[in-house]
Each structure stands twice: as structure tokens, then as C-alpha cells.
Length: 335
Image 1 (cartoon, one colour):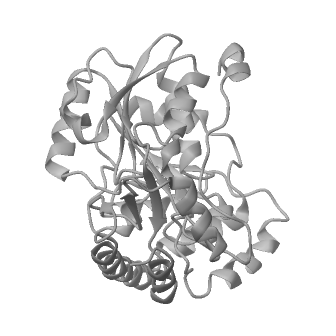
Image 2: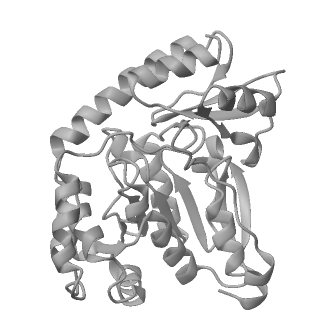
């Protein structure tokens, strides 16, 4: 990071509420966790009395099976954002530009600016048609946050091919891909995949994730990784969760069913963006976003103010939660 940039670049707003009396629709995390995960966490206390094994081969092997790559291509990280930061830090020099989708996760632009780079914003729906040449890096969020749409794998592959020809690294943020049946880009040459485990498995405070990369850049990411960069509990719980195939399948089906139901009900009052994710983006039209957020809060629900995303000025984002919680959301939004 460049010292002058660190002094100037501020924080970005995010969802999430720590109020125990509020149902949190502002954060896109699973309200369920796999059975047995608390026991695994508690059992990891004994391992936490020593430094974690280096390199964490068991975690890497499970992650490789989870996304379909080779274990040696996996770089463990404390969350997906750590994988994103490491990739940007190794690719972006001061003054260089990066293709960034919008509206999308605001931390991309922040991390680029911390390196002294310049985000080149492209509408997320047009990103795969953009020219990656003369950019140090291209970023795709799949599925995209906050819109929720996933990209066609053939178009993604074609874009990745153009990036390789331009010698531009492609960073694919797949934080929400686990909620879908779509294939990962993990293991593709010239692509860095960033994965977060904490959304699908409902453990955002665990800080567990990984990057996947190949070739010389993969070696660079491996070399740049801090020793013991993940705690023993995070490694144990992360590996346990990635192997819970039944939980993953059940979660995907529940999210798909509830998302379809919510979108159908909400479409009468709002313009609802198509989504493949555990959340929906709503255009509230002439209604005041602040008023809607306040109304929901008065009824014990926290919604995400999506006007903080570049390009959105009349939007809120709502998570897809459990059926009875979603019923409350529909009632409060007068659907």
C-alpha cells in the first residue's frame, strides 16, 4: 500500500446489524449453520494452543475438492476480502487502471486506491464485453453484489481468454457462487478466484476463505501469504463446512425456493432485479429509501441501504432468510 493513499482512502459502508432484537436482512449470510459446527469449533481449542500446521494441507485439500482444482493451487486466507487484497496488491502499481464493475462490492475500488491505482468503472452488465487490454487487472463479481445476477459460464470463459491474451489478470470474486450450482473458474490459467466460506455457512465472524491461482502468479500469492494467516479454529471449521454436501444442497434449494417466492410477492410494489443469489435488489421508485428503512426498523427488520452502491439512488437490498422471517418482511413491506 502507498502511505499517501492510506491517509486519504476512507472506509466503505456495509450491511449487518448486531442488534439482537432485529432480524437482519441487510447482510447476505446464511441464517443456518451446518450441524456439528459448534462442536468442531470447541474441539479446535486444543489446536489453538499451538501454531497452526504450515502449510495447512488438510484445509487446502478440502478446498480443492470444494471448488474443483488442485490442492497446490489453493492459498488459504482469512476471508475472501484478504484474497482480493492480496491479488490487487500483487498486480496494481501506482497510476495503473483496473476494470471494475458497478454497481458492485465497494471494497474493490478501495483496495485499488490503497495501491495508488485507478478504478475504471464499467456497468456490471457490460463488463464481459469490455476490453481488458492496457489494464493491470480486471475484476468480476459472480454472482454480482448487490444486483444478484450470475454470469453465463461461456461468456466468462471467453472474457478470461481475452484477459490472458492481453496479459491481464482476471480476479473472480465468487463469494456467493456456493449458493448456486454454477461452476467455479478455479484452476483456470490467468484467473485468480477469491472465495469466502462465511456467507454460505453462516459464520461471517470466523474469517475463513481462500484464493485459487495457477502458474507464476499462483506462486507469488503463495509466497506473499503470511505464515499462520488463519487460526486453528478457522481452518478446522472451514474444512468441516466445505465437506457438508447435504447442508449445501439443502441451503441452495431453500434459497432458490424462498427467493422465487419473495421476488413474485415483491414485484407488485417494487422493481426487483433478477437474482441467482441469497438476496434481492429492489428499486423503490418514488418512495423515500430512508423512510422505507426506518419503517422496517420500527418493525424489527434491518434492510440494506443500497444507495451507497455506485449507480444506485432508489434501491434497497434484502437478504433471503427463513420462510417465517421472509413472511415478516413481506408484511412490513405491505406486500
